[in-house]
Image 1: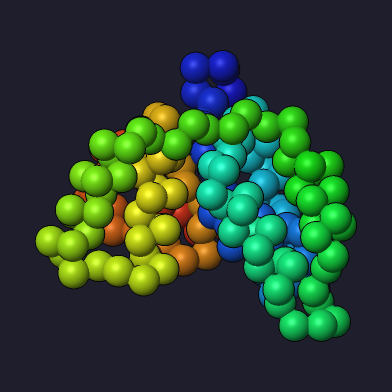
Image 2: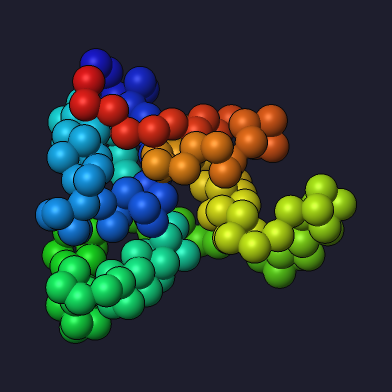
Length: 152
């Protein structure tokens, strides 16, 4: 595969959590998907909000799965610290997104999903890897494809 065909992708927080939580039901599939992408030369770009969400979840889930904040920070840094971070859109984009969400009567957790996807789309990311593909209507994005992790 040549350099021009390399894909820019990002991971949703649910994928980051699955990767770091060895007992997670999706751990193995998510790990294989990430390894396949990186081995073929695709480039992972991270969205700050997904790192914050992963940190939040991993430090609040019930014992015995909960981890100390310092451990989660260390795991995130060790596993994802080398990848490029995507800058979130500016303040006007927040207002535009809120207007779109209000017009569509979308709220709750899908607000954050919309922000994350908008961040990826604006940065030219080609694939957004998530276990919640149904939360991201494909007609809202310029070029961003929403995909679930795959073992193949």
